Length: 472
Image (cartoon, rainbow, N blue to C red; front, side, top):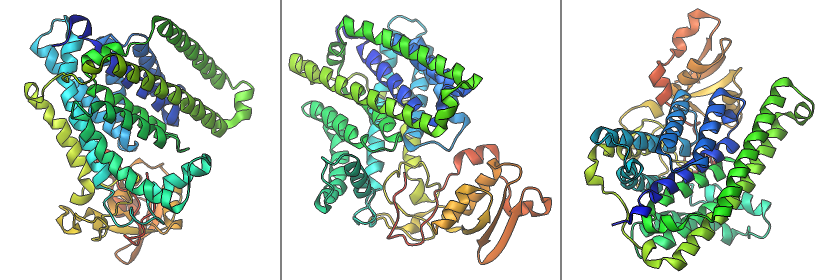
């Protein structure tokens, strides 16, 4: 049993780390910045939690705003944001269950943590399973096409100290599979849990060195998820010294003032912001987030290692919560499993946790080493079109790269396109043209309903399933 002064430690640690992940999302993705209404609301909610992560009410407000803002713009989000949305759903549903069972605020944060933490552990393992399973394909193991080899080359080009030779690229291919398999296994056993947390943080810290800004956002999400594998006794010992906490709050205030000033300047069109231009501003913001992430990573590692040295037994202690007490929450891991199985079942291919995996399951051909293409439940991935011309840059880019488009994806893009959208494409040997300004062509691309367009999401399709280029 946890001591009374340790009871809220698990909740506080997770709430802080999850809010920090939200902060790094803000640094990574342009559409979520402070100049957008959703971005302003998210930033305020994140900072509000970071000032007082012990408050379950503040955390609930952040989760609600984040859940709504992501759902509002589904499905076009990175894989880890979709995953985070399901985690947010788990957290909010567990809070509702806990409140219904006992509405008293006494020890509510601890009761909430005991409800959601075991399910979040399972969800993390589901994510790792699919990130490994999707990579078991022919293109991933081909050094000329493998995403891991490509990422390794790009990191080594940016950091010359990292070897970029062919042997190092093969280490990247097989090492990634081994580490992503090992992390969840290590985390679930008390004797290896410390190694699992440290390995996970170092691995994702290395991955975040890649210049793609979404990767340090993803790594911060994984760092937050590791906290549910830290027993309460160890979590309580991770609290930084009081002087660090004071400096932290002052830094937050300063950062908030700078954001407010930047927002005001950008809205009144003053001076240097216009000269910088949006691209340079975005690159600068990404770099700031990148630097803050590594300060955060090494600070967290230092506190964790210090805790291991001083409280060895606490680190190996029993984890809070059991799934049997809140069985209804099983719906969320099942949702992740269905989403991750989407490519093999013919349901969807984008944001199905197949990021950087080289997976191909379209047009009746698969490059996966285990799952055959014949088990697909639909023919959606068989119905491909070739783009001939369009006023949509995304479609023209697919055409220029010799990529086909799933017909349902073309219908989705037509459903969210501008009023002047038009496209000429080849489908089943026939050339057809859709033009939003010409009603007689509307039957060619029937629009999707509100819920359909939020679910269907297919990535562009390679011609050869054995030479699949890397896509995130």
